[in-house]
Length: 120
Image (tube, rainbow, N blue to C red):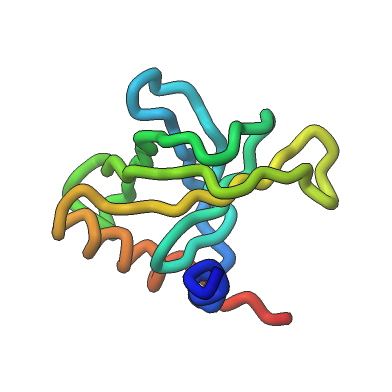
């Protein structure tokens, strides 16, 4: 349980750029990036996703983040709940791992460039 609370202390930032998150194997839209921490992302989805499922998440990149056009993250859905404000929309939390050092640097840039600190 200690590790779970440790994770939640990771600073989350609201994501300010409209970025799609796709299932890398099917190229089906999973949702849109809503917030980001150094350990995970929250995605707004129009359908509920099973918890504790593994995904290969594809995120198309902008040229200011990388000269690559997209990256693939290993993701595990940790929670899924109905959005409080948007009917028929779900918030899904993913724990993510990058597949390479280059992708880890790109993910860090996403966090820094497009993430805005959440004020409580």
